[in-house]
Length: 330
Ligand code: NDP
Image (tube, rainbow, N blue to C red; front, side):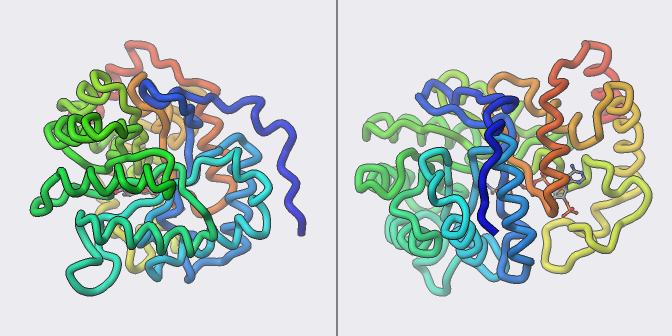
C-alpha cells in the first residue's frame, strides 16, 4: 500500500521551540525503543509511524541498541523510510544515540570517540540515512574524560553525520560541564533527554534550571512511566502489556498494589478533566515550559492518537495540581 500522509497533519499539533535553538519539536514525539524490533510485526510498526506523522509527530527517536535484537529498530525504521517516509525526510527530525552496550569488547559501550563515531556510522547504514538530525550521548561515562565525549559529538556534527548534539541522563552538574565544553568547541547543546513523569521527578532537583539557563531543550522519556501512568494496569496486567512481556525493563512486580492504588486516584482527576490517564500524564509533563516534548512509546496506533489528544487540555488548576501532589506524596 502506498502511504499518502494526511493533509491535515500540521493543523493541530503544537510545536515548541527547543531551548534557544532554531528547531521546533512536536509537543509529543514518538520513541522506537519497544515494538519496532526484529521480533515485532513490521505492519504494526508501519501503522504507528503513519499515524504519528499524520498527527503532526515529526520527531522519531531511536538508539543503536533498540530492538530486540540490538540495531533492529533502526533497521525497521529504515524500511519504513524506504517504503513510506523517504519523500518527507526534510519534514522529519530523526535522532539516534550511543552510550549503552552495543557490541562486544571495549569499544562498543560508554563514551569514547571510537565508540560514538563507529556506532553512528552503523546507525546511518541501518536506517539508510546520510545524517541524523540529533545524535545523543546516551548516558554519562564515569571514566572517559568529558572532553573526549563532547569532542566526539562536535566532530560528528562538523563531519555532517548529525545536525545537532544531545545528551541523555546526565546530572545537572554533568550537564553544566558538557554545555561549557560544547560551547567552547562551537557546537551548542541542542537538547537533553532525561526521564520524567509523576513517579520520577529527579530533573526538578536542578537539571531543569541548568537547561533553562543554558538555553538547551528538554525532551522527556517515559512520560507514562512505561505504561504505569495510563489506564493499562487499572484492573489487571494484560497479556500483551509491557509488564507481561519478557526482556523488558518493566516487571510484574512494578505493577504493585501501591502504584495501582495511586493511579486509580490520579485517574479520577483525569476523568474530571475529561482526559484519559495517559493524556493527563503527558499534559502534566508539558506543564513545565522548559519541557519541549514528551517522548512517548506505543504498542499500537490508538495509543498515539490518545497521546496527541492530551494537547486538547494542557492547563491545570492549582487545585488539580495540589490534588495530584497529595496523591503522589501519600
Ligand atoms: P512511555 O512511558 O510513554 O511508555 C510507553 C508504553 O506505555 C507503551 O509501550 C504502552 O505500553 C503504554 N501506552 C502508551 N500510550 C498509552 C495509552 N494511550 N494508553 C495506555 N497505554 C499506553 O515511554 P517509553 O518507556 O516507551 O519510552 C519512550 C521513548 O523514550 C523510547 O521509545 C525511547 O525513544 C526513549 N527512551 C530513552 C531512554 C534514554 O535512556 N534516553 C530510556 C527509555 C526510553 P504497552 O506496550 O503495554 O501497550
